[in-house]
Length: 420
Ligand code: NAD
Image (cartoon, rainbow, N blue to C red; front, top):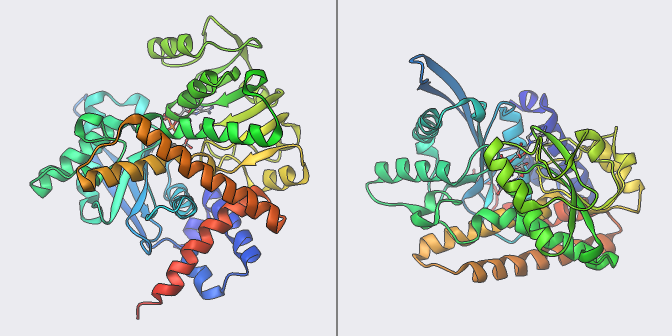
């Protein structure tokens, strides 16, 4: 299994970041091994009947990295590129993120290898419900709590809530987060990740003496995270000059109108052909000068081919794993880019997920304003912790953020001891 996992580029990336940080922390070998490998790797087959009457079998995964500090927490991804290795890497990153944010969760992640754009609403519902049934013995509000990720949304979470609650014989809102508010989802959860990304960019701007009103940003990805980051940044006065998604990339030196673009995306399914901007090559877009570059789509998009050419002041990793270790080495040798590493940058989502879970368990509801205030307080604390650690230890922001998360998990494992 180790060999199979290590065959995957994204898992290798997560392991390489872990090993580097464990070396930096001089982590004891026995704890290091326990922290590195996932506790449970669950693979299920998910057969559904397609609308044309044919049966198709999909592969689904859920990886629970460790359960030492609480239930595992992490998204569910529907994407053609989903593999067990990718899911395991994302679960590992969730660990360090939850620990860094001081949330009582371990890391988990799930996914189904499918192209959601080719599935009808009915097929998507059947796929989700059948997947939930297949992994039912392994999930629960105290074991594993899923949330939306690429290709999934609050409707997906509503179906999972329904399957789990029907099986339990009573309504169990704490089984997932990112649910609709009508099912006791939290106010503010949908925009939480993007809002957090934008908030942290302003914290970085403060450190660099950049004023929002004079600043520009380029965003890759206009889904949940990218679009809400764009909205919040433009509300703060930042001009968004470039945006890309799977359909292409658009550019407007004067700033893209985010409200108009959102309408266009709802009507056409993508940013392509938006009348308020010009076409730009998506790879070229990443290299344009800007104050904040926000990869909010895929892994490994900042790599050894483009890292040296980036012209941003802040690299805000809204996506998980957007920067390869080779690119990291290049970025570290440049002192002109302020990195907000993924485990910190996109932690707004899991933080509000935690608040949703707390509300579900307590049968209590906070207002959107209360949620966003709690979120910003937590993000601010983690941001300052990372910056101070990096300064004190003369290390990169990534190693600092991972060190804070990994140390927390390693300590919990040491204190609990090894079950015979
Ligand atoms: P989403 O499915 O809502 O949106 C993904 C976006 O990426 C879409 O606009 C899609 O068109 C675009 N995209 C896909 N392929 C692309 C390509 N080749 N080039 C440019 N754009 C492309 O997903 P999301 O929830 O916004 O997640 C985006 C990233 O943020 C993922 O890495 C995810 O793991 C991470 N993340 C999401 C959350 C959350 O709360 N949703 C939380 C933490 C991290």
